[in-house]
Length: 62
Image (cartoon, rainbow, N blue to C red; front, side, top):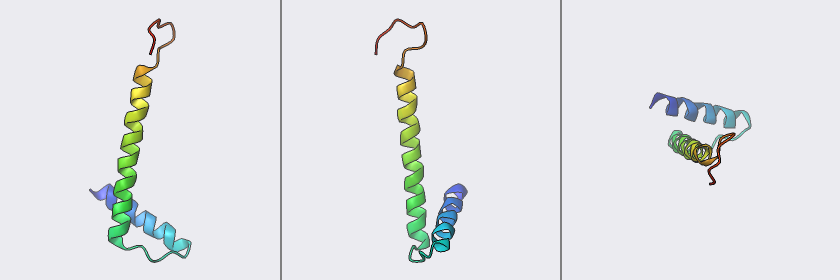
């Protein structure tokens, strides 16, 4: 996944700008993958909340 590698590179670059140079390419890719997993989980949770929220004028309860 090209976007994952791009995010991993950005992560390494941003950390390097702050003087942190101990993160390997594999570690940054693992972190980037976990970030995408967490974003997906949050999107699903937010979608579920929106799905269960009564719409304006909707009488159903949640």
